[in-house]
Structures are given as structure tokens and as C-alpha cells.
Length: 243
Image: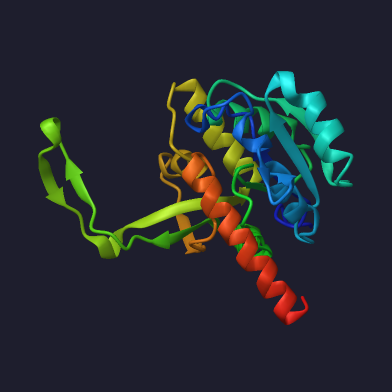
């Protein structure tokens, strides 16, 4: 009998945000980074990732045609299965993407459209964990001292840094598990800050794998400048090594 984790892995890419922190009229996922839209960088990585069999792209309703005509087709993204309309919040968009994932899929990996620097290793390790039945997210240990702050900016408590991680995407799960977690969250009106939080709230374990400081989420003009620096460094490293 075939295990439920031996089927296809489908990526859901939420890219339906408005990008209000960026300012300007262009949504953040379509801003240029090294001459390409940020979203294109993200999707190209998934296109070249052998562990991912297909991609569901979730975009603003009014930008679906743009995504097809200006990103999917020009960059030859053959793994894109569909471009669907997102919702008001990120969680609404991921849920819409999950509903579009084929019922036969075994694994789903969720990755933010504005995280263009996740590398193949992050996807491979998280997907491999999910195939073993272990929900997995990538993240990095927190370096700064973190304090819980109350009203009037008064410190309540200094948290134990050794226990704190900044969580990123990709995040990978067995498909039935994530669907169940999302179904329950929407029935109960719960909104979490990431996909793993919906799994955690139904008392299922999630493992954190090492991510990268370069795996930034581009949400502000400062992030875009940092992204340009990361891209330049990667291109220079590629020239030096010939990779």
C-alpha cells in the first residue's frame, strides 16, 4: 500500500498582499530586484527545485493576468498549475491556495512570495521532514535580547533568548494535516501569524530547521535595499566560483 507521504509535493505561494509599508503604487511582490520582479525570483527557485512538483500562485484578483503575462510566461515557469485570487489576510490567501491543491497531493509547502532568497536546501530539508510525517519550518535563532513590553512601553519581562527563534518560510506539512488545521481555524475564527501556528494550536508538533539570515521577507524600502545587496553578493560569489 502506498504511503500518504509518497505523492506529489505542491507549493502554495501567497503573493496577494497590498504592500502598504512600501509606499507607491506598485505592490511589493512586483517591485524590481536585480531587474526582475521580486515574485519572479521566488518562483524561479521553486521552478528549479526537484522536490516541488507544482505551484499554486495566489495573487491579488486584479493582478492575476499580470502575473501570467509578465511573470509566468516570460520566465518559462512551467510548474505553475494555476494563479488564483487571494483574500484579505495572508491566512485567507493560503487557505484559497490549499483548496486549489489537488486532492491527490501528499505534501504542501507554503512559501511567501516576497522571500526571494530561500535556497534549494531549505525546501529540500523541510519537504523531506514532511515526508517523514514531521511538520517543519525554517528559522534562525534570535541574537538580540527580546523583552515583553506592556502599556506605556514598560518592560514586563526579559525572555530567554536561547529559546527564541525567528521563523521564516518555507513551511512544509502533509496536505491532509494542514487542510485540517486551516479548516478548524476558519470554523473557530482563529487567525495565526503563520501556517505552523494553526498546526500548533491543535496540539501537533512542529520542528524548526535552520534557515538563513539572507532569507528575508521584503516588506519595506529598507528590505529592498538589503535585498539588492544580498543579490549582488550572490552574483559575485557565483562569478568567482563559476556556479
